[in-house]
Image 1: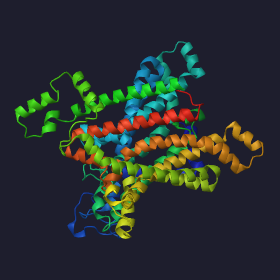
Image 2: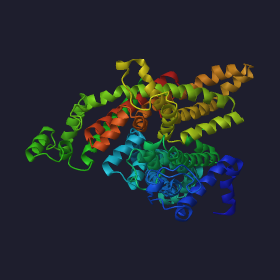
Image 3: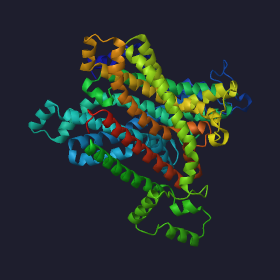
Image 4: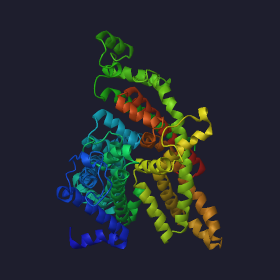
Amino acid sequence: MSRANIATWLAPFFARPIALAGLCVLVAMVVAAIFAPSLAPYDPYAIHPMIRLMPPDAAHWFGTDQYGRDTLSRAIYSARMALLIGSGVVFFALITGIPVGVFSALFPRLGHVLMRMVDVLMAFPSLLLALGLIVILGPSAANSILAIGAGYMTTTTRIIYGLTLRLRAETYVEASRSMGSGTIWLVVKHILPNLISPLLVQASFVFAFAQLGAASLDFLGLGAPPDIPSWGNMLAESRTFITRAPWLLTFPGMMIVLTAFSLNLVGDALRDRLDPRFRQVFGGEG
Amino acid sequence: MWSFAVKRTGTTAVTLLAASVIIFAFIHVVPGDPIYVLLGDTATSDQIDALRHQLGLDQPIIVQYLHWAGQALAGNLGRSIFFQAPVLSVIADGAETSTLLALITIVWVALIGVPIGMVAAVRHGTWLDQGLSGAAMLMASVPTFWVGLYLILIFAATLGWLPSSGYPSIFDGGLGNLRYLLLPSLTLAAPNAALILRLTRASMLDVSREDYVRTARAKGIRPWQVVRRHILRNALLTVVSAFGFTFAALLSEAVVTETVFALPGIGRLVVQSILRRDYPVIQGVILVIVVIYLVTNLIVDLSYRFLDPRVELQ
């Protein structure tokens, strides 16, 4: 990416300080996930029965849980799971949505049938679909990605389908076609590059909602195994101790809210710099 | 109008048919032979053969599907392994809680989301609008169970004003039992009110860019009259239709809220059935919720078209 290009991407953030703050939070989360072993003050798995359920103090900023594990360290390590689930769901939604959506728009006859199948999947509310898939696949972090991703695959496919239909009708695409370009050339040269910015918007929203979905699955005991640090797992465990140790409820929850809110802010800022014709595909809010 | 109604109903029927195939397949793709799933590990081979024949599992898969679909249409969704009772009656037991929870939640969503969304739209671009829109986005970023646990901590555990869990039927204890649903409905309302707020605001802003609004303003009609008579009426059409979708979606979103507050509803039934491996109940609940979801969407679309003749079939 050239310098001018990066500048246009960052422009909406400098115009809106709160979106810039959101971007900084996300960068901090990524840093926390990558450098968790050096940033976390303690081993997130180390059990210390002597310091069970200790309130926040100078040694343990976020307090300790019912096994005496350091809440701050577990919260930092949880950023890894958040990043894994979020990027996994986005990847899954794009890797399925792009081929199906683009293909359906370019080949309307078969595409119509494919999009009807997407509609059928959309008849299942996303959490219900995720729960059904978890029953079939069994609970695990990887299966959380598939179960949550299935719900966003459908909306992403619909958006890509809508965008490709618009792009297909553009004069430069028709011109290229009339000069004898093949379908693959059209897709690579004209369709995909134009999908990048709207898909970046969609990706940030999907990433945000994947956080909430994964937290719900973890909370219900149907997500990642309970000993793995994740904000949802931490909240599920805090439930028994909410009156005795409210800090166990506060900090992991704040991390989820902070992450999801920042992603929504960034998505909103990116959407505002989109081509107005594409903005309608996202429901015309704002 | 009528051709639209027929076509739209037909689409729903086809979608439901396809969805039913997926739901039927569910019990065949869960881990393990459905017979073992139904009878448990201790079954004898005679029992297995008898049940296999009784359920028609020795028949071709198409025949099995038609049999299942026919039974489902007649209201027979199979038997719960855990309760040893018809699935439909198990679901019916949770229906009161879930329906009341959804209804009260919808009232909260309407009372919170619509007026605040209107204020944000009328004050478009001001700090008030930015503050309210920002707050709505924040609410949409909060996990529902976290809100629920905090409400329990504050209003039940600390202040002792409201019960933290369970729900005894209003038919047993009178309308006063609705207080058990106060915290759960607020929990469930939070993210949905945020969505309705944003939708109300966006749709009012959309309408206010229409030519007839500019004409009304140019005629010298007072600003609040323009808002009330020209903008609000048209904008609320979109919002009201969103309530239909929200209501249907609440039934599945309630899964988490009902678990937090230990409510005897359909949502908690799903979670418990998953942990108990009571597959017929899971299958039944999914079918019921998908039917409600599709029928609500159909009704919303038809009434929308009826209320606003400008809407074209896409």
